[in-house]
Image (spheres, rainbow, N blue to C red):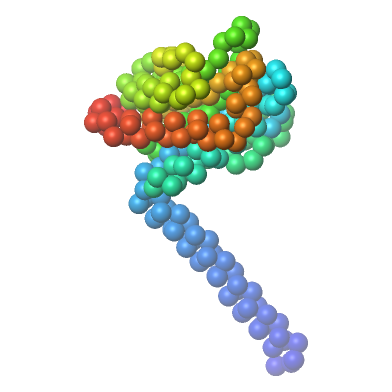
Length: 237
């Protein structure tokens, strides 16, 4: 056996060994993730918009809704994890979920969010957004639910109540029914949380600050925990 042949054989064995280690490592990671998820209740947090779809824009600072949604969703995820939940974020960067920004990107983006929800079978889904209205005096957080889902209605009501209890709330609101894709794409309890109006200067000034976003996230968590503690949350899809 020549010198080069022996080394080629040795290199082949090393390559195979490395490949096996990589496969086993990937399997171990997937198993660890699955085990961790199985031991905790899963929550899907959906930061609305992203990429070329920036959503609405603040009238004073020009801040994009998608950026506020992401910042608030990341804080909300941290709070849920601290409370013992397994958190799945639909997006973790400024990018959207549509791939290339070609025709039909919005549909692809929404389908990707729906797939994430279905794959993770969460106890609840929270989609974070910001509002906009022609009347600039309109302000405050507003929560939406799917009308045909009693559990979604209950989830939205609890979150709206917690948001109404914030010192910054100038006028309490009621949770409203809404016909939106993220509410209709699964049977899991789901709510859209419009955290404020970027068409209102006071709301915008609050929402662009990290401190206020954390307060909003804390209120959303409070409402979600109240929902999960309610026996009614387990009676209906």
